[in-house]
Amino acid sequence: MLPTAELHIHIEGTLEPEMLVGLARRNGVALPTSDLDELRAKYSFADLQSFLDLYYDNLPVLRTSQDFYDLTSAYLDRAGRGGVRRAEIFFDPQVHLRNDVPLAAIFDGITSALGDSDISAELILCFVRDLGPDAAMETLRMALPFRDRFIGVGLDSAEVGFPPAPFKDVYELAAAEGLHRVAHAGEEGDPEYVRQALDVLGVERIDHGIRAMEDPELVARLRDEQVPLTVCPLSNVALRAIDRLSEHVLPKMLDEGLLACVNSDDPAYFGGYLDDNFAALRSELGMTEQQFATLARNSFDASFATAGQKAAWK
Ligand code: ES4
Ligand code: ZN
Image 1: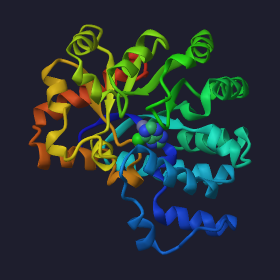
Image 2 (image 1 turned 180 degrees about the vertical axis):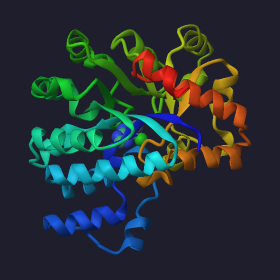
Image 3 (image 1 turned 90 degrees about the horizontal axis):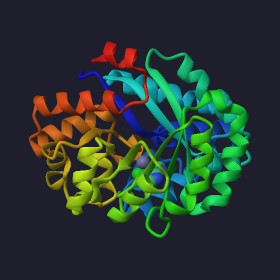
Image 4 (image 1 turned 30 degrees about the vertical axis):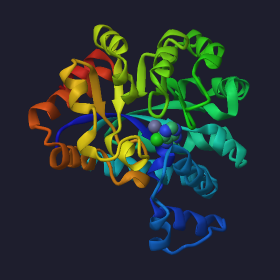
């Protein structure tokens, strides 16, 4: 298995139906159904919002630090079998806080699983953009006592209608705290979302960014500045950003000299983990081992690991 870094993975999006049912039972949380086939049948989406509706509906089963430990351990085990050596993992504290889970339980569960794994893994705290910039600021302030447990901040959830610019102050505080900054942009939003994330939020990486390919000037800038793009091919198909994988812009991104890498986003929902993404890129897009080697190298270059760590992986 090709050694790779995974830089765009929502830990909540690794909640497989089997674990969903197990946690619901353990915590006495009611589910609309416990039938695995019925649950799997719901994992079919028209767009980002229809996915988010199910993703948020499932999250109340996560209640204790043990739940977060189990979820994170299962992801790290599976990812490691797929070649992942480094993982920079997103989590959505606002969702769990709303479900009355204390921030300490979330951090304790996830970070103890990271510590028990052979994979080099770090956490990136995401703001739910549709809850707005004030809520994001409140969340960052609440998380600062745990500053040593996460390396950066991100921006996720519904994109169109929730542009990056209003989050300027939150990102300024994050920068002042020495945190890395990334944001989802250009998943469903147009190239202006990508530009705002770079210019107003000062992000170091763009999550998705596929719609940047519609704007040649922006493409030239992404190439010149070697801005990393964490592309999620199976996610884009599952959420209908593209009709089929054979139409994905990833090969064009590499041809343009962009620093793109492959990621699984929400693997429990979108049809697979990082190795499944690579397998689909091979079978449906005819991508080559040489392209995969470039993508793997890009993933380590794009990571927030130290130069020493990167040299050891490559
Ligand atoms: C997400 Cl695929 C995707 N896009 C935006 N926000 C998200 N949160 C979890 N998965
Ligand atoms: Zn994502």
